[in-house]
Structure formats: structure tokens, C-alpha cells
Image (cartoon, rainbow, N blue to C red; front, side, top):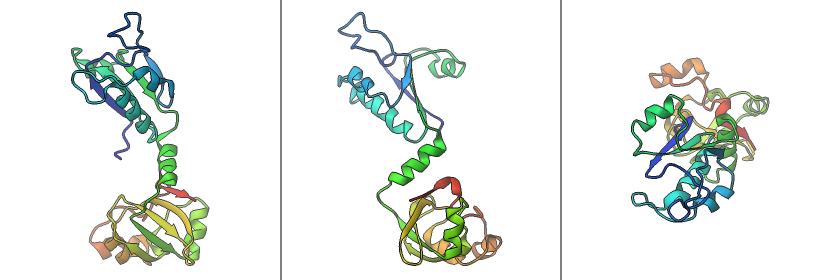
Length: 209
């Protein structure tokens, strides 16, 4: 949600092992791998540590979830002295699970897979054409605002016939969108008393359906 570059999980283990190190003395630490590698779940098993709930497998699943937003994950031992500082200095501690897609592509994939919307923006033909050519959605192209939503909500973009064209993260609340729709971006400040963004939905936060 905060579009972080990385997720760091500090636990009471050194990281992910290819077997349970408590019962298998030959278990080896996995230093690096892809977060979406399903074999890591099998390695993690389901045993809980003495502190965390759910054990290593829940951390692997958290890494998989973070990867869908383009964030890498580091699982390291929080009992190691100066663990975060040493990691930031480049010391190889713990298990690094990297995301295979960029944050932008991951965010758009998340939008494409989103099942529920907080509202709908009905667009005129000009806005539909601009959106299909890869441009951002400006308030002047919106004819109607349906629903009640806040800034940052996922909304549906539909044409005048009600056909869904896209979905995206909106930069203004529903009440604000109703006040600025059919107006140019240069009028936002005079209508609202401030301007947060020139676009109602920026093209980086917009995915065509």
C-alpha cells in the first residue's frame, strides 16, 4: 500500500533453511531466491518459532504478497547485533527473496486483479480516447461520479454506456471529484482551495481492462 521498495522481517531465526535446523544439523541457509518460488513454502514447513505466530511459512507467504507489489523481502535474525545497520551496509545477512516484476508493473497487475471498487467515474468520449492512448484521466473528462470513496481508493472507469474501460487509484475523494469534474486542471485550486494533483487518476496508477 505504501509502495515500499522492500519488506524487512526480523525474526528469531537466521533466515530460511532448506530443512528444519533444529532437527537437521545439515540444514543450510538459503541466502537468496525468487519470492514466487513455491518450493520455499515446503522448506519452511509449518513449525512456529518461540516468538512469532505461524513460523517461517507465514513469512514466506508475506514475501510472496509483497512481491506482487514489486517489493523485495529480507528475512533476518533480529537478535544479531546491529542487524539492520549491517544489512544496509551490504552485509549478506538472512534470506533475500526478490520480486520478479517492477513496482509499476506489479501495481498495475494488482489493479487488474482487483475485484471490488469503491466507486465509478463515467467518462466522455474524449477522455475514453485519451485513456486508450495511454494518457492520464483529467477531471474535465468525467461526466458523473458514482459511489462514496476517499483519495487512494480503487475506482472503475466506464464510458457513457456503462462499459468498464479501466480501473485505477483516484487522487481525490468522491465529493472532491464531483466538484472538479467537467473542469480543467487549472481550475482545481479555485474550486477546492488547494490542488493535490492535476490528474484525477495518473496513468501510472491506471490499467486498461
